[in-house]
Amino acid sequence: MLWSISPFGEAKVGIPIGMAKGGNIYLVFVACFVANVLVFPLMFFFLDHINKYLLKLRFYKKAAIYVAKKAKVGSGDKIKKYGFWGLIFFVMLPIPGTGVYAGSIASYLFKIERKKAFVANTIGIFISSVIIWVSTLLAMGFFD
Image (cartoon, rainbow, N blue to C red; front, side, top):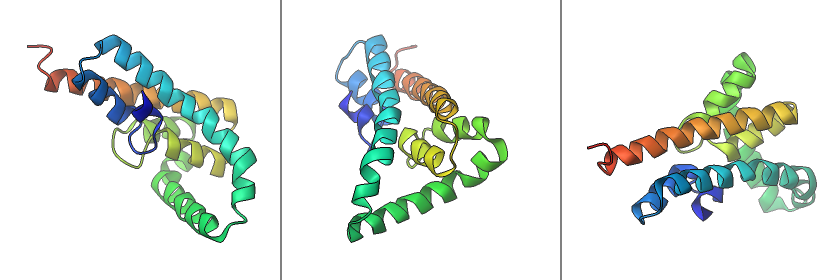
């Protein structure tokens, strides 16, 4: 579950690790999905309240600008063109650099209505989690 909250893995890493360690396959899915969804409100709290103070620090500001540029470049075209659906697609891709952290930052930068952004991120996380969960089950020979 902790991997699912981490920006270094999200549910993309939490689900396979939980299942490989012998966790109940359904409980692992639900716990990792819920943990990953919780990142969205945590990110917006950070962006709304803590980020503005940290931007006064030179090293943080430099890193924040780098992350913001990566989020805009990686998601910008999809989100600008397809809006809500583009955000879902961006978050659901089970590859590094996409997910709820990048989706939250993109939502913040593109000023997407918070409720819509939360729903889009949640749907994207769910689809990504299902893809990872089924892939892990297949790799473990669960369906054999």
